[in-house]
Length: 450
Ligand code: 5CA
Image: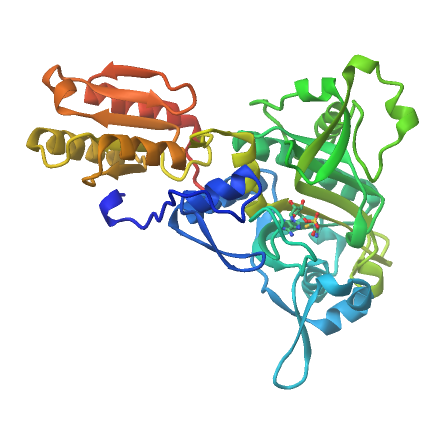
């Protein structure tokens, strides 16, 4: 992409309404624009990050054996009457009446709709196990939407639903989700710690929230510092192997880590004092096992091996896709702007022409741009007339992890500069070597999506 033809409305001033750094940088970097309270337009740069996050989520869900689909945002109230949640859900649910006076709602979550799909099409235990998911906009009429996309009213969520014959099978699905989430967040450059939590309006007894530690987080968390030493890394996992998935769950829940809703001071105090931590965190996902809470009242049964109809065991599993954009910025920035992890960066590399209009510099940039694109990379080429200082400031603000700087002086010696946004370190090398280096850096981060 050439900056001269792009839409990147960066702001010089710090917007007064933004209280936390991710909100400030998202506005300043031209990623989002508020449409109304808690509702945002995703401008081109923000949209690219959102899609990168979605694609990682898709890849990891599909790797775990889960099946993508798409359900609508608007739902019929009748389904929610069947589960009993239409009245229970309260003021957070946006209720709408259509022209025929039918009660509709903008889905805050999808347990009812997916259970209806399941009961219409599945009737035998032979079709199980089954896990379906989608990435779709949700609406919750939050009383206090704030911090930009962190607590929105309209927000993008990945929500997945498992259907199993027995509780044991459903708990394997729970474990599978836990493992796939650990991989997902790490690919986004995040450490998200599974913590025992409360299930709220979704229901059920087994639930973990995934929290990214950050001072600006809305949740108070209590944990044993040893939990932060655990990394999933690049270990191979067979998602059908129950013992393997169970072992990962046990490992990652082997240390005390709870949100304030489930915190137990007496148990916490048994941890050696120097390892006790009280901190804040951003909830970027939650997994639930709730058994037959929806399948029983809604008649989602299958015929078991003995011919008897039994309600299926279910769970649901969410990732806050749009919230993650803010969470990643909270976890990775400095005083000059965002520092994107390679896995989610909107463009792989910034290409800065220090002297636009200089024939040699222009030609070198064009050649580098073409070579990067030829390798499947996504460069953002600043081909504008702006001064060098302004170009660097914009690149630093929007946070591309790598920058190639091209100027007449370097070109006389046959070199360009490759700079890391994270460390600030620069290295001179030939244009070909710079392209090759960037391609190597991104080889493990190329996302296919679906
Ligand atoms: N049906 C279940 C799982 S599919 C569910 O709705 N879970 S949830 O309520 O925990 O939401 C899943 C994730 O969505 C949360 O972990 C959080 O990261 C994100 N989320 C929830 N509310 C908001 C909000 N108001 N703004 C942005 N993200 C949100």
